[in-house]
Amino acid sequence: MNAPAVAVSDDAKKYAVAWMGQPDGKDRDVFWSLTGAADLRLGDDAKGTQGYVSAGIDASKIFYVVWEDERSGKSSVFMTSSAPGAKNERLAEDASWPVLSAGKSVGVVWERNGGVEFRKIR
Image (cartoon, rainbow, N blue to C red; front, top):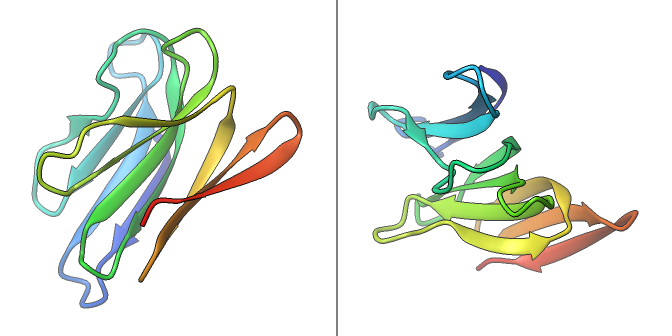
C-alpha cells in the first residue's frame, strides 16, 4: 500500500481511506475502505494501472474518491462515491493527477496538456 488519502466526517464517526497498491504483484490498482467495511478494489476494469487517489466527504456525508486510471491505454480521471447505486464514472480523458475537494460542494481538478482543469461534481 502507498499514497493513502483519507476523508473524515465532521463528527469523526465515519471515514474513508483510499490507496494504491499491488497485492497481486502485477499492475497497480486503487482500493478504498469505508468505516468498518472490507477493502474494495475501485477499478472495475483490471486492465492498466490505477493510482494517485484523492478523497473527500460532502455535507450529506457522501464519500467521494477520484483516481488516475490507464485502462484504455491513456491516462484518465475516474470518480466514484458511497452514494447508493454509485458507479465508476470517467471525468476526463488524457488527464492525470486528480485532486478532489468536498464540503457543501464537490469539485475535482486535474492536469491535462500542461494546464489545470476543474469540474464541479455537485
